[in-house]
Length: 215
Image (cartoon, rainbow, N blue to C red; front, side, top):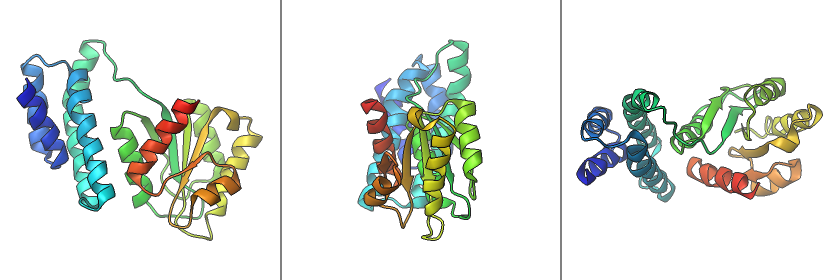
């Protein structure tokens, strides 16, 4: 059993889709509960990938491949979870997107991927997202967190626009807002009334966890 868990984790860390899928199948055949495999192999594997990325040992392609390997394993586990009527614990619901006027995708997508790998239910709205769309989605899904990305100094003001729109809609008190992107900073987050700032995808996961645990 332990060897299967280790090999599954290594498959995720190495971004090996086929091996991750095969090890997930083997885990089920060996009688390992899906939730056990997720909590002991997939989640720690993605955590390790994030740490390596933060240290500069891994790069964006490594993150993407690891996330794809994790998804391949989850495709095997999800039917088994449903059959057992088990659910992976969801620590929170996140709505994320790049603000209006900005079409930068990669950084936002990496944050969405890492949050999803950490167990959060993530709704990625894409790029060039108007404030009204953020508001509508937050209301629709009952989001706990809103992630606002901007990579241009000319569009970062729209992070503040979204926060104000949430306030006007009466939703701001119920959600935490985290901002990111090249021109953003902790000082900027405080200035516009956001709850947190993250410099990279791995840090974003930790910031979101801390914000939700703080209540």
